Image 1: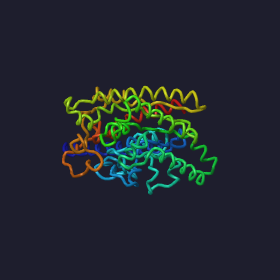
Image 2: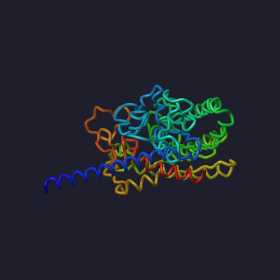
Image 3: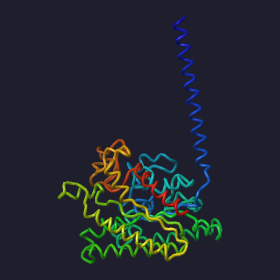
Length: 368
């Protein structure tokens, strides 16, 4: 009898636990439904730049700089996920910003044939991995130059007007949240490359001024095309990227402080330029996103995000691999990207993209 009572008691507990679990699942479903039903803060998220924000445009062009194959996207389990061309194991900053603003969880690439203008009406990415402020940067790896991204933006507006009408299109364009992240390739994939010889044409100070002038031209152009609420990201601590650490053999694989100094100086000049534009262009709400200091802080204090490796990428050896070198063949790819700052030798993991997106979202909310 005692044995029977014990069995009945344990069975009752099991049933109770199942009921509790069912309630929790139902609550999660309700929470998810509530989140999806959240009223959007802005009508759309519109993105320009390079691989830090490209969600798949390079899939559609003839370049070696692609990431639409495993293990890229291995942790992106949402509908429309997988190896989408995002240089990451999962989502990118624009995706997280879009979600935070009450819009879809993924922001589609403009050249992705799986999406239509109906999808682009709430978010679109014109960015191309490998691009830069200097048009010659895009030619190094045969990707979309920034002027082409702007051209697609103009085409998008025409398609949008056909879809929602001229007034509806104007409302979306003028009230959208804009994300711009570009500039690192202009140094690492252009100025410092022997094959371009750019360092023979300009001193570093001259080249920095040249890039800041190109950034000013770009921001002025999208302002004239209707953009009003724009975040512009500064350069990261590019000397601490795994690839640059690997190449910095003279200093034992540490951060390349010369590159970091260049990034800091560029950021100072970009900030000054943005202040001038805010004063000159009426109604232009322009916000700077400080990527550099956020990055340095996490590298200096990895425990804040529960990281174990901030010097190598998760993919393959993590020292030099990205794009086609980061593939399923390597047996060295880590099992848990959540412990790493970098996914490949150049790009952050989804965990860090989520972290960086909070700075973008905060900056946007301050100018909406």
